[in-house]
Image 1 (tube, one colour):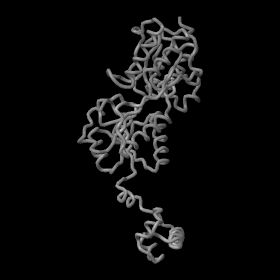
Image 2 (cartoon, rainbow, N blue to C red):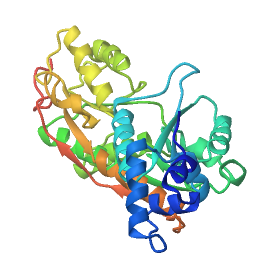
Image 3 (cartoon, helix red, strand yellow):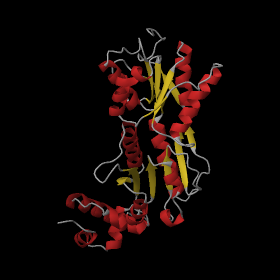
Image 4 (tube, rainbow, N blue to C red):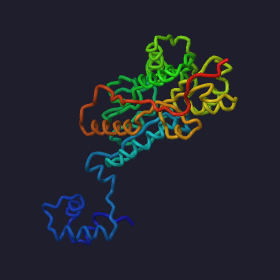
Length: 342
């Protein structure tokens, strides 16, 4: 049976208010003997304060929602990048005395339900399209502060944290161009005129301009960001693009699948085709060959997201501009000067 404040108070011979004051560190009007007695009984009886009661008293739930797209009712859109972000967000929230609730959203209409039914202190949106974030209005969010990760939405109800996607792709393409590659395939999901992939495409093209080259003839392969799609692309890459000597993939998991697909058809990496990814997820350093990639500060991204959101939740002013984190290139074994093109 759960031990209550009333049980502690009866055994100590004091009021429930006195017990509450001792437990919460308010000792100004409580004698030292009473404080010691109450603390001893609390320890002996194994009393655990009620989180819900504390939340009601403090008018805060200490709960932060993490909303992610669900591919359907049975699965979440959890990429290796997002998995890493999940872990870092939970760790930061735990250190700051908050709890994380994860919810998959298969229809953006469910965002309203999630925000209103959980008594959240704030919510992080990860993986949603910019147009989905744009549609969120005051009737959806209400007073709950919202933060987006990896979004280019300008919705004034949200604050954002993202990486410098443009610079990252520019570094990746510049690395390949500097090695002597000219026929470089851009591989990533379908994109519109705004968003993460679009920025990476613009950065990719800017690198060609930096080298006084035209990127207009560089092939674009539209593929979903999955290992399976990467494998499929690798298997058909040289059949579709026989003069290609390199690929820039907009995500590591896609690049890793690409390397596997190339190997399946006997194409050596990097002797025949060089591959660069984006993210620097852990597995990138363990595949063969090890993946050259653009590294994001995943810890910084998650930590900054939590701190920004909790600052707003605590009454701080919502930042008007997103926080953009630096990226850098990590050179490993999947890139080399071009060779072997017949």
